[in-house]
Image (cartoon, rainbow, N blue to C red; front, side, top):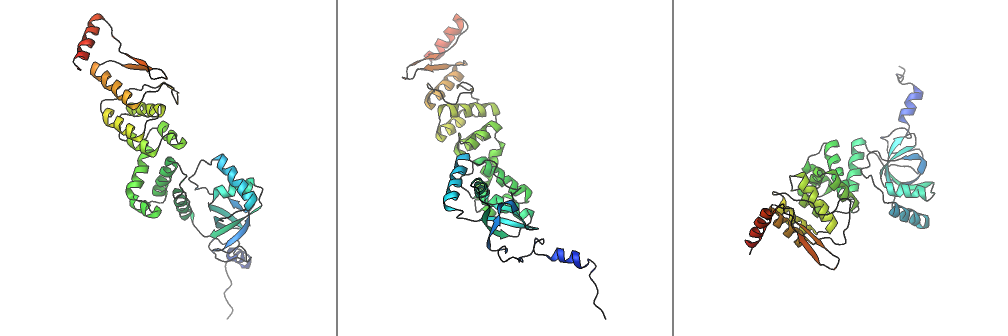
Length: 303
């Protein structure tokens, strides 16, 4: 009895079983490009990772890496997945890939592995989270994507990246901050400690006002925590000038706190002006003689 012929036909069946087109095979006809081994692959055969969580690549550091590759070559291989038709997709190592292209390289040492889309996303996110040079917002967004797109709980997410659940929760809370504060975190103007203190303020105006004064006056995390503790419920008015990153006559934290406490007590917008040498004046506005007398009486009661 003759053997049953394949419905696919010899030509199509051969294509589907070809190691060059089969994304699940662990073997290839060429000895070099074997899944699980480090191979040398042409850069034009590698596409970038669509799941890459990192959005900002420091130009100066990328140029430094390019110089290093020109002189020493690639020390650590990148990781790709096999797509078929002798095509590959990057899993991790985008900085090395970009720098290699900038260095004029045609090939790059590569570790090949098999992964589906979810595994690709998870590996890329976890690999990026483990890097120490990510800014807090990039880490936060990576955690969020890991949970939403890979359908993981906070507990499962913490297990994947080897972090405490509370750490994951604290990063996710950063995404509730106003965009202006998140941008400052991305630029490195504000630290994670400052941001965690600001999160505890419910009123967005007070939150932004403390944020601006903290940046303008260079307040420490402890000072911002004290400001939040003092003004989170009663409100806080910004004293630094708008669109000013640093002020030559900026007020120290103790003066800021005194000014706001006095303003609340007098029900006035108290202002302190000072010179670079530390001299200055305290300004308390009044509307009439009666208003002035009431101010003097309140000030006398402070004794």
